[in-house]
Length: 308
Image (tube, rainbow, N blue to C red):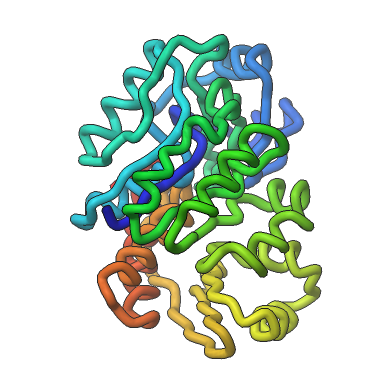
């Protein structure tokens, strides 16, 4: 197997909302907020659902890799309930090997409300459900050892059982890629993430906002200097400014695609990671990997949802 992803198994519930909806519910645009089951039900009661998809950041990347013809798998915790069944079927339909046996859990399958405002930005409210209870017992180390790369998400990292799952995955992996996921995650786990990036992760994916926060940098030049010092392989998306890879001390850049009919930015980073990893596991150069990543992310933002 080429890549195994480990992440929060979340059913994405995609809804269009006016700006006022965010204001009325004290939500910060373009971020992810963790909510409990009651808040989830309250918000959902006021929304019109556009689409429901088997999601989660890493799962989106893994599906993208599968659509490009790669042999891939995914590990994530779901409940043996209606949404859990839909989740598993959704991955199987995309030719992704789901490496988890669902069973009855005390919490339901995780769900994420993806609220799309008229400017195409997405704001996420996530009820992790049983996804947030993943532990080292749910991680199949034999499958991980047979995979070239393990892809992890910052969303998954948390104290207790999820951290144990994260640590076991890293220890079992041949090579580790990780997405920082969200500014909220970086600020919450800054010291731990910095340690992971410096010492345990081979390829890190971040957007400009996240990497500035992680490195306590005031400018992008400071970010570049920091990454050169730690000599790591870090892939950074910069929106309309394109993307940059800093690998050891070399810098590679790719311009963003222009004249796009942007509908929804959901999944842009996930599909970018899929395109880049596709290049890396198929022996493309960093420049060509960046180009593939840019093409995939530019396609997904012209559709609703995080799938092509």
